[in-house]
Image (cartoon, rainbow, N blue to C red; front, side, top):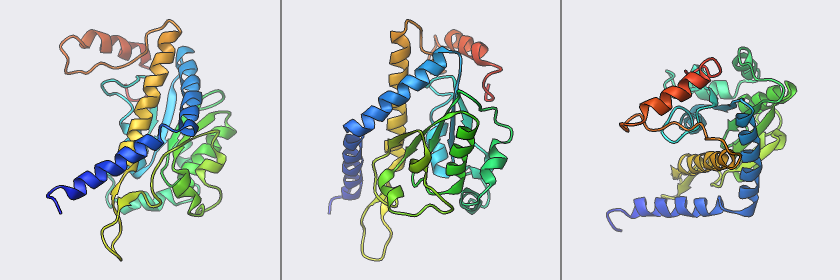
Length: 248
């Protein structure tokens, strides 16, 4: 065994999953999602986005960042984030029917809006109920979820996310997320949903930006705050979206 065999094995698996993300089935849903998001932004709207626990990290990496679109309204309940103590509470609440109603109570999502939900297994009530509540209010839901993983497990309290979302972006990966076998009786190591899911969502936003450019507008993308000439551009974006985004 080389000094970095495990590292290289993991990179090979991630590369394989990224190649699967180039499949026609995935790219078709990316194309459809990008059209909806670009149209919403061009109309002055925002993209709502939700994820719990580690799926929440995928959403956190999409807003207020260098190269990221400004009009993304994250829905990140503190009880479902990984700085919750004890962190096991996040799993408990994800699995609690009705908690989504509490989350959505003060969220102004409604008719004609878009909601992106990231949930790797897609089996927990909070993600499924968030989808159903948004749809009941007249919104369209785009899900990033692993159909393979989700199809191998039962919904905890009803349908799974891929069964109810309007558009399903299939996140390649293994059942259980972790991909590297160590030995019999030991759980796999090396989850792939984070690098692959992040790449898919960033790629989706690049496609959205290109569509906005094609329409003749400038995409509302944040420049790195660590570039000397970025302040004026970012200040203009912030002024434009203050009042429409809760994080500004």
